[in-house]
Length: 338
Image (cartoon, rainbow, N blue to C red; front, side, top):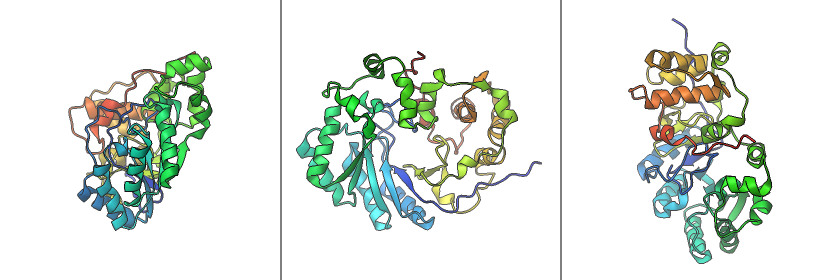
């Protein structure tokens, strides 16, 4: 029997806590496939207690809070923030798309509430992907509200401000509209301008314009997946699930970190870590998985295998959580080829 290398996350550094997956937007680049169709669940206080306790145990002293859109329900977010304070984990910032903004006075009130719960900075999403769902007037209003409330903020990414400011700020604008406004290839160039990770919804949106190779090459060249070890930008979600690297849709219990993951509890992660995508393929092929002829990358093949196992194999896989991710990850539109 082939020996198995066990994944062991000993320490965590900088990362984020996903308070909810529900979102007011369904951005085509979203790594976590958030959307309005997700259940409106938030991390509960007892889960937050366990999460921040585990983060401190593993050496993490600061996180950001993300989603979904975490500020859709501030009252349900506050207990999560309080648990961070209780466990002496600093909140670097909260990510927001500003869809909840109604007026400057209302936003200032929310910001001052957040300040009382340990939050001093917002990351304000600003990009063509977000502008499909959130009008720029809300983003501009939030920037003014932050200044008035004394809350730090940084637009992400500010490079897009000038071109988005040319548009009607009172309404969102589709990527098709921006392609027509700024010329052919605009959406294609966004991939590199934004610095996208080609996983999650971004991978599937850009698939038509990316080079592909036969799937057998990825299996033949497969080696142990060391991306699973990355801890410089980790995430833990509202189910107290640790997401290895940027591998959305993969999970292990945050309470199991700090020691080697047992193969009986984590057969898929063990297979990936030991043998790469070929190890994962060995689980899926006997269950009926049929690969596409070509894939963009080993991560593309991995996602396709995991989607099959999560949705079509008829078996529950605790490592492929949340299952809703696999239902939501598909884009409704792909990048224009031209």
